[in-house]
Image (cartoon, rainbow, N blue to C red; front, side, top):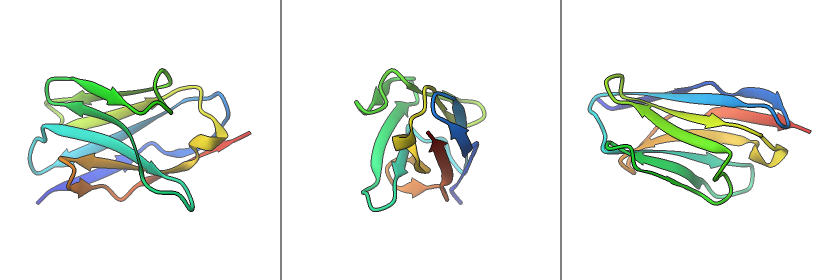
Length: 110
């Protein structure tokens, strides 16, 4: 059974950093990604990473967020630096465009 469990969200001030983690169980996925959804907005793809380490980023987070993965642990991370109030959202881990975690709240105060 596939299970994705996110952790690492919280409340921070603008300019600070957070690192989100997503532990995947079941099988090893070729592509994993992070999304976010702010109130009243559509879910947004932020970053993705393949099993070979190739990454892609949305323009909104490029240069501030870094996605990485620990293959043996089947865990994907999202390092978020220079956080802004507009980064406030629920952040979701995704595997193979099909499986979703439960989400973790990130709140950035000004």
